[in-house]
Length: 257
Image 1 (tube, rainbow, N blue to C red):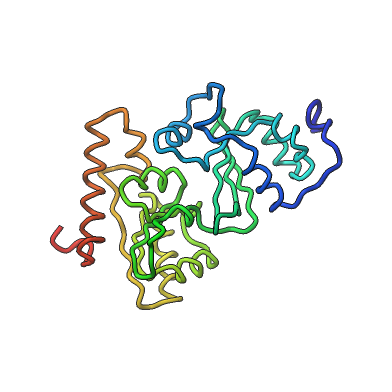
Image 2 (cartoon, helix red, strand yellow; image 1 turned 30 degrees about the horizontal axis):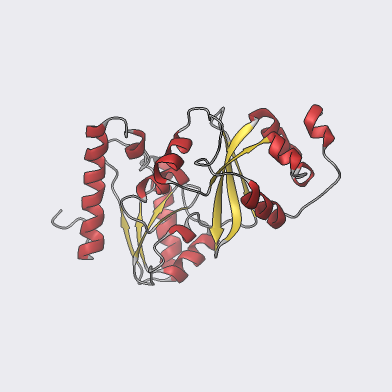
């Protein structure tokens, strides 16, 4: 399939991934600052509720006006062309954008655009975080950014396990991990893989598993229930108690609970 119209108008200009990420992080408005009405979307709602400024709005026209389209692959341009408008959820390390997850606002489709595969949310944890503090690990961005209201030191893997590189990065940050992967087959396998990889790097590290509320499939269900005050409060109270128990008491996660 050949692209027509706006995609054919792009000048022959190529930027590196690092340059693209920098340009977009500087010019795109946050969801909060976007002046037009956006389609209903749980990520949009999340950004507005908690003021996440790394959630940016982008359109195909924006990429064209900033002469960035030639820097993307055919499949990426196909995604932009079909989506029209999309969220770009930036991930920074040391204050510099290193990756972005791009989600369509029309369909449940997304792509990852990264300098390298890393952990999402490292720059969002408590600045006073130190080695030996507990770090919560989730699968997706929505999970971590929903749960951050309960415990700030939380990151997501953007997959159902952790890569070798992610394990190496995490092992330099702390030696205590609370894993909150999804309650499905992928989450079960991911927990085992994460445990093995983290233990291989540091056999003495502490790893506990956060049991999800009732039959919820992931942590994000709590925020998805925010329009049902009772359902939301039940989950928030449950998770707050669990986190307080292990973080505050620093004992065995399940003994006596």
